[in-house]
Each structure stands twice: as C-alpha cells, then as structure tokens.
Image (cartoon, rainbow, N blue to C red; front, side, top):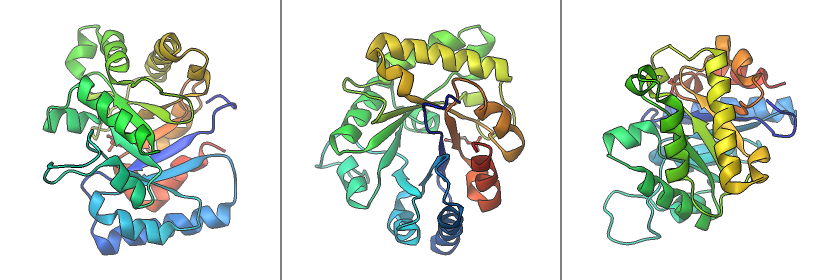
Length: 253
Ligand code: 13P
C-alpha cells in the first residue's frame, strides 16, 4: 500500500442477502463508519441488485460507498433481466464491478464484453472495478503473468484513469477456497499489472488502485494490504460478516 493511494476495502456480497440480513449488515457497517471518522480508507459494499435501494437507504450519510456487481454494456433497450450502468447510478451507486471471474465463467463473458461494460460504467459516471486473474491450471502452467497481461490489455477501456478505474486481481483458484498466493506472488503480479497499466495509461498507473481478492480474511489482510502494490481488497465471504469486514478495513490504518 503506497501512501499516495487511498486503500479501498470493497465487499462483493455476490448472490447473498435478503432484506432483513442485508439491511442489518449495511446498518452495522454504516454506524461503524460514522463513529470511526478516520480518513484512512474508503469502504464499499456491492449488494445484489435486489438490495441496492435498501442498502443505499441504510448507509446514507455514513461515508460508506455503494456499488453494483455487474452492468450491461448498452445504455438501454431490449435486454431482459439486465441492468444498465445508468440504472445503478440512479440508485445511488458510485461503483460497478465488471468482469468478475464468476461472470466470465457462469455467463461466458470475454474481455471485449468486459471492456464494453467498463466503458458503459464510465459513461454513466461510475467508478469501475475491473476483475482479472488466472485459473489454477494457468498458474501451474507458468502462465499467470501472461494471462493477467492479456486481461488487462483486453478489458481496460480507453479513457481509464486513476480516478475512474480500479483493477482487482483475483486468482480464480483463491476465490472461496481459503487458499491464497504467497505475499511474494501477490506482489509480483500486482507490480506486473501496474507496469502493464503504465504502458497503457502512463503516469495515471501510479495512482490507480489495484485490489487483491480471493480468500482475504482478517488473519491475512494485514500482510496482503501492506504490500507496496496492493491498494486494498475485494472481499467475498468475509464481507458478509460485519466484524470480519471491519477488521480487514482496520488493517489499513
Ligand atoms: P472470497 O473472499 O469469498 O474468496 O471471494 C473473493 C471474490 O470473489 C470477491 O469478488
């Protein structure tokens, strides 16, 4: 974590939460944010679409940010079941996650589509979190850097800046498994991603946040977030427990 970049602690709730538990979790985090009054990190929750309005109401005025988990690449039209970036912004979102590996796997999303979704997010005024990361087979084959290089190249839209874009490095094999790369491996990939970003966006890359995601927990967050090119976390399971999510954020201070 470099002091020039404000760490971002982002919770991806995935397909979890109904009205009661979702709003209770959001309210608890909002009250901790209000009483903490520190400027040491930015905190974001990305609930399922069904809860965005309720969570937005529960966190209003707390400083906790709101985001969506996906958006369509088009502004509007005949796309049954989809949500546009403008609709997310309309609900009070400031962020949208695009290209999560679960979207890439479950919905066959490819880099070109992820790039179009990211561009749509920017056009709607949203900050975009673009997810990349290699599979276990790709890492075992020595292709981790190559895969992340091609995902950065293919998924980053023109016009990406440090202010409107965050990269999340999420090794697919670390998501929900309790396994993580070593800190040396994480730093190696993050530094490599930053150099690839620099080749695309020049000096903007110095300010662009690169999050680590994949089995981040209170017990391993401090050592991961302390790495020079790790600027926070994109957290799944542990973001569903207020104590765990808050404990992760506290490691930024
Ligand atoms: P876990 O923290 O549950 O491994 O999930 C990480 C993730 O996919 C966040 O987007």
